[in-house]
Each structure stands twice: as structure tokens, then as C-alpha cells.
Length: 160
Figure 1 (cartoon, rainbow, N blue to C red):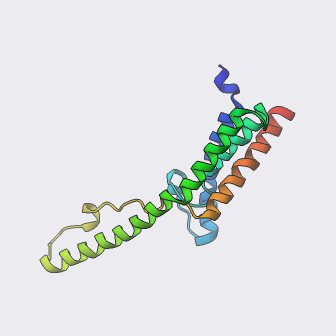
Figure 2 (tube, rainbow, N blue to C red; figure 1 turned 60 degrees about the vertical axis):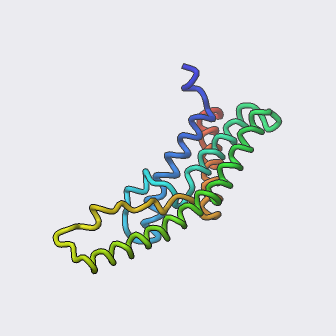
């Protein structure tokens, strides 16, 4: 049952859950609409990837110290994940936006030229996932979320 006392693991999982959940009220504030699908989607504010890896690194720091090799590994891992979230994954999302527009334009062309009767294009075409990566500000606030949540959890688990 040592798994249940693994503070860095639980801090990282809590950070993922919190970051995913808080996307709903943040989106509501920004758009005045509730979208519960954000809880299970990628992208958005804050980055749950950044929250998870910073919570993990912060939890490891509490458990093993800032001078431990495992903290170094967790920190480098966090940096790589956050860099990837703003780089490769974000560009893939931008490409998906362009591809979805091309697919939409093509579908409109096919519809206009062939006049397909009684066909619902939305059922035939599945959009590519556009919200893959994060803007740098989303990664930053994901990182802050992970660190602050771990500090609070550490206080409740180890101090009280």
C-alpha cells in the first residue's frame, strides 16, 4: 500500500484533475457558456500537462530535496513536457485548424456540385482535433497551478 503514500504521484494526479475541472469556469467567464467537455479535452487554460509535471517536480522536491538526482530528473521532464506543449503540440493544433477548413471547403464544393440529396455532411466528416497544444500563457498558468496545488496539499498532508 506504499502507492497510497506516494505524495508526488498524488499531487500530480490532483493537479491534472484540478486543472481540467477549472477549465470549465474559466471558459464560462470568458464566453458565458458552460462546456463540460473541457474536463476531458486537451488544450485550454490552464495546461493540465504543465500542472501535472510541475506538481510532480514540486512533490519530489518536498520528498527528496532540491539537491536530489530524482528532483533533477523530474525538473528536466517538466521542462521538456512544457516545451512540447507550446511547440510541437501547438503547431499540430494550428495545422489541424487549416486542415479542418480545407475539409469544410471541399465538402461545400462536393455538396454544391453533386447536390447530394439527404446526406448529412457532419455525420460523414469527423473534425481533426484542433485544441491540441497550449499558448505559452496557458503553460505558465498550468505550471503555477501545479506548484501552488502541491504546496497546499503538502501543507494539509505533512504539516497538519
